[in-house]
Length: 282
Image (cartoon, rainbow, N blue to C red; front, top):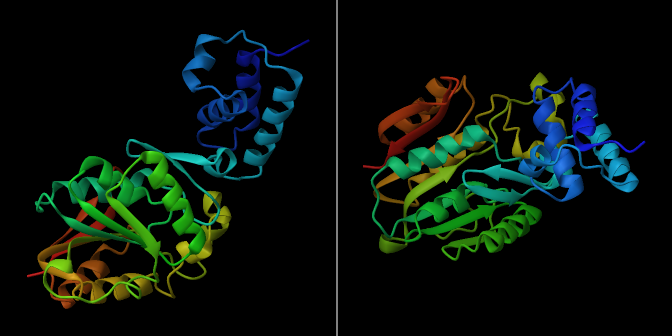
């Protein structure tokens, strides 16, 4: 007897009880298998997929049961208002990182703002800002060639022409210049997890590149480099915004102040945890 959409969803949710989002995971996997959206599943619960589709769905369920992130299984992840392609060469864009975008959009900057996104990964931050501010000119860089290629694919898919993407290890390939070539905004979600952190063996991060997660014994190695170097690339009154771990707020604010930034403050995420610190270059 053929199984209906409703039956498959119920079976998948039962199997994926190990996930905190079992129902959503099951809907996403079945929608991906059938090449339809989740609304369709609710509209046609009695539809009976063919045998080959059921077999594919079951294979995807097993991958998720093994802990593989949904985003890597279906190859996409929503971020801001965009649907982005993802790959195991980059971090999966997370809702917490949308706070970086929200904060950047609130700060006063010229209509023709020049912004730099360091360690762009899938391009999520730069593309979200570009979609909201067509007059801005954004540069997005990453040290990994595969990430640069993925971000460029996402840029083309989003049809955003105000973003330039290229390869650079942080600031290494970005020229130091004076005057109008400097940036009004530098923004980054760098690695900030300590070497040996037990969370690296848990959940989705097991499948993500360690180079995008780990930053020295204290988790601050890359943040120190970015904060110290950013002053050479920012316009006067330009802003630096970085994401960091929830226990790093005090240390990161200290790094900003030591580098000469003013108006230093930390924004909290939806769980009221320190997540984004920003400062202005005098």
